[in-house]
Image (cartoon, rainbow, N blue to C red; front, side, top):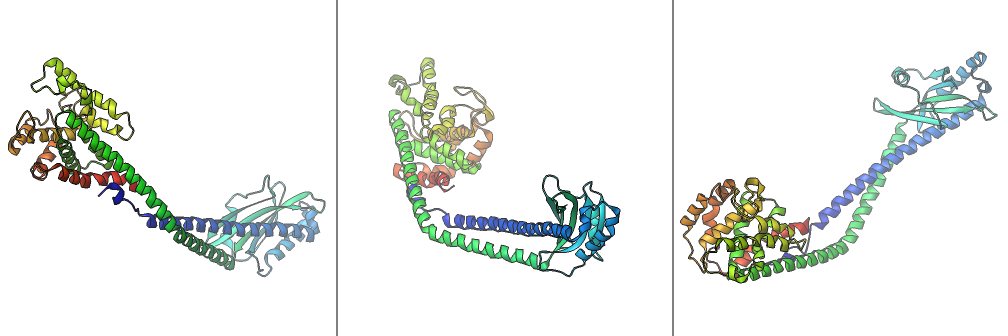
Length: 433
């Protein structure tokens, strides 16, 4: 099965549903906020109108600082707060008059609101500065209160005082906010869900096409990778079997040590093209049947840097350079070309080095027969801590026999199918994400 066929669909419906719920919740919160602001504005507007009516109805407000006018102002304030409840968003509880120097001139309160008075008096007054009025809200005993301070103007338009009022928001008003919020939220939820249901088939079809094309592109990239690996193998008088086996061995070891998906993709790509740099090695050295002399070996070692240069020329293949460039490094630093050691060698190169040597030992080559499994493992163990990362080698030794049984002596077509099944999920994860 190709990658394209594996990922023609995606979990689109749950994502759209989750998005709809989030949008509905956000709009519900916004609705609640604006409904609350609407109530605040209504109370502030009422307080401003009441202040101006109060100034018009009480002539003494033309000179509120005059001690002779204070009794009349206090009587008027008492009448203001003791009026029966009205069909308004809030009930008057406290009313105070301050002169322009913020000195209290007169005040009136309803009976039995001592706790509210303490809260108001313990908090600095939000006297308006640049604006005509100011307000603040507070909760007490599960009820919402709004304190409003607004300027009072004489008939000639001159500001003479400020009127402070404390209003208790009525239960009917709170209920109205709640009902409106629930109604709007329900409407939004239904609208979002209806829109989602209408758009889902279209989005699903378009998403399927995108995934199909992405899968086909990925198949093409992987096909090119396989073809390139095969070309390199043939250049080296080998077959693609080695590439398939080392890729499978590397995947299984990487899974055993918990390598993440991104590194797994780099490892698989690197396994296929690990010797791509041998294209740059001349035939008399690359195809020499006997042992290379020191000068020839120095030339052969350059295949890792040539390989890194080649894979870096394409973004999709660039991350394979960790394997291509460093798979001949050794854990103790005696490898080539940079002499890296320990964790300085990328983990995917350390993983691949074990898979590469194991396959070379257990496979027949033109210049040698295949070694038995037991002898191959003995050679690996001899390189523990020198050639190979001890932790990775120990993990490999636990699964080596099963892997040898699974992959040794298999035909190319079978290994190709197994590699497709083992490696494709790590590439389709990119598409699904």
